[in-house]
Image 1 (cartoon, rainbow, N blue to C red):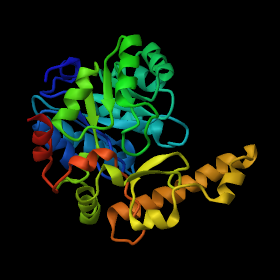
Image 2: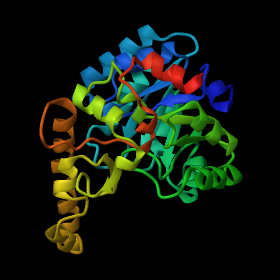
Image 3: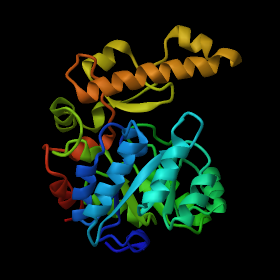
Length: 315
């Protein structure tokens, strides 16, 4: 499965192990590199810049031929650590950066000076053309089958639209749980895929065994979209707790969100509460099970080492 993405990152398979908040870590990415794919970690998984720098050094030391590693940056004002994270990543070096939620202009400029490729999350053609104009090396096309915060278009529609109107490679994100799914995305014109949810149930993942087992026990039909985490629609497993609290904003949040002055503060409070609940559910046993995942867990049948998950995606 050699594609343009394989050539850009010098990887054996055109697959990126998607960056997942709370889940991704260096152990997963090291195994991803050994398996011949690219691995990525959200910079926000590290509380301090010193921890981020240590992770970069660890991954550089573990780099193997046929694999690649990168970091995901939230590039809007909500990430107060953004500039420091970008500086550390450019100082230490990596193969690629994935940008999310904001303008990637500064990231592209600084990363290219350091010889780092930049791929940008987009959900439609308008933003794809903007990041292409800014000099992005590839587009991450987030479709409506993605886990977490997803796009609104189905994979075929989104990929074909971007491939027809953009000159840089398109990497499809969402809806990949097996090799047949990868083949489908490539047939639409994608240069590669970004795969997240199947790796939640990896031995190396930084989450509880309960969360991993949920990805085995539940399937695509059990994924619902909720507004109760970040204020923005997000996919989660429809556990009894999620059913209990509902997936829509409360009546008070709905009213406050219509107030231009209060809207920003309501979103910030909702985001803070939701992220704390998600973190607790992912990292310790709690009855408040808010587990983020996408429909591609349909193909997750066991908790496996990362290397075996890669085999299931490529063989």
